[in-house]
Image 1 (cartoon, rainbow, N blue to C red):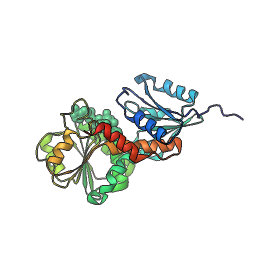
Image 2 (image 1 turned 30 degrees about the vertical axis):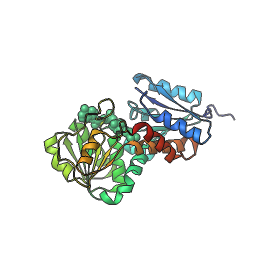
Image 3 (image 1 turned 180 degrees about the horizontal axis):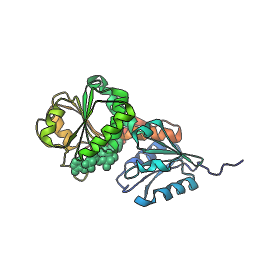
Image 4 (image 1 turned 90 degrees about the vertical axis):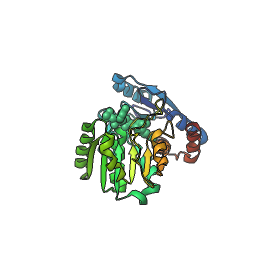
Length: 290
Ligand code: NAP
């Protein structure tokens, strides 16, 4: 019997709104070209209330797979046929595979986070970590940290403390991890919290283009020598947050490695092929690093 739906168009894409600043089309199209694969990756700007219709279209057209970004990463779950265990725990999907009309959701941000932090594992595993932000990126960070790096304590610091508190309640229950503490983003209160953290992560959108002079924290003496400071923002690559940290002797990591590795894992899920990571990493860095 012939399958009702086909998924051999070799069309990939990203659904979001707005979508024009995404680097994913550049990365995936370049990877396909370098590997001589017949895939094309397109940006789809989907109006906020049209997600369900867009998914019907994807199934009808046989689009092989796609990424999902704001504002759909959480809401899409209820429309999918299944989600990976990881994406179900995190409560957020950024990659979907279409197999003969059945949509499966994954979260590959965790791969990007793991690959960025793993080289520093010995420096911060088992120690205190602070995350600034409580949105989708923060959820993937909390999951990956608990799963792979077993911190002694995770501080979630957010402008809206209630959202940080919701994350704490959620992950305490889902992952049986009882060492999450929450704070409002008030510079004076959080300085001691940040000073005692071995790893500090910006998971807010503050500092992103065009507001490149902004930083979630501008106060001096928040960073310390040999602390590891990771900014999930990748455009610009060198944010004000990272510049401040480097000025105080911290080791700084930008969001490009996370971007490339989350893409590489998605590419593998869709095509079964390894993305040529070094070449893509170099190409993205050429665009984003001064
Ligand atoms: P999100 O779900 O919309 O969350 C945004 C977060 O930023 C919230 O915690 C929000 O605080 C905070 N925020 C926004 N404006 C702020 C301001 N003016 N002052 C203080 N806090 C503010 O977004 P997301 O998906 O988590 O993305 C967050 C960051 O992660 C973005 O910069 C994105 O580029 C980055 N990211 C990077 C990668 C990568 O591959 N490198 C992948 C995914 C995401 P409230 O709760 O108070 O609103």
